[in-house]
Length: 363
Image (cartoon, rainbow, N blue to C red; front, side, top):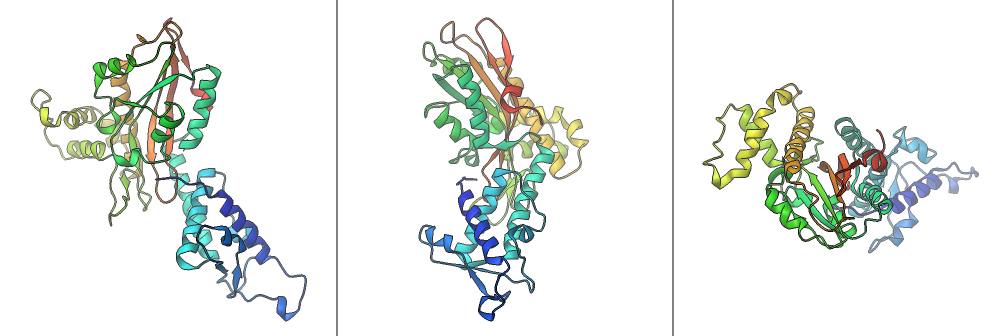
């Protein structure tokens, strides 16, 4: 999903709500607010195009503090905070106000999304956080002349503004990228593709490879699906990976890669997923199986990538940075997440330095 920071709006909402619900020091009738009386939220005046709107408490006994309003739904994830902020802002803009129950629902929904992600993709973070952590490591290595390549599924939901692909292109690749990937993020351009890419690296420059399959989460919080704009139902994401697994579950015959030239990438995925069905069949249906499918697809792509990589580019000081993981297309107002699974740098002397802990720590 496209990502816009709205933390300031939520902070203002928090402060305004706390003030509005604060017990009055006066007992006069004029200072007592009815539970149904609109409470003016002056910060909304600053929203572009917005008119002063109202907050309506529907409870017969309104909470006295914002902490009570949250009803124990604490929040410790910045992306969840931003998503809830945008959801609240959208409700106010659409309806002219918002109830305490609706605020609580936005917070609970954001927390539930994060809970599912943490359960199935430990260590996953918002794309912007991944970028900042990777940049800190690159700065340590003084790697500022980088040509970026990405092996990511061509699905349009992987290449929206604010996605990790977009952030890396603008902030690591200097606005440029060489594409290695095909269906499911597998580097189907192969050795020839990587060779062409690496030949473009500047003298004294460095190479950075991002390889990742993707998995969607629908508005119904189902992994392996995505609620696309303009459609009234959720569809598969990654469609190729899910389709390959369904082909195998149905017991359909394995395709012959020697003759399947018109749909070679899909047939390759079917072959490779077929080899991994024992691991997939061991998982419960639903989110658990879909998360495992993403992990298996990641390994398929990583195995092929390993066959293609080379440090035969640039000069003696040129380095090859390789990062792999799983791109997660998030629902609602969330920025997309990314689960980093490997991050390393390879040097011309043959040494390989594992950068994962340095960048992402332990989870």
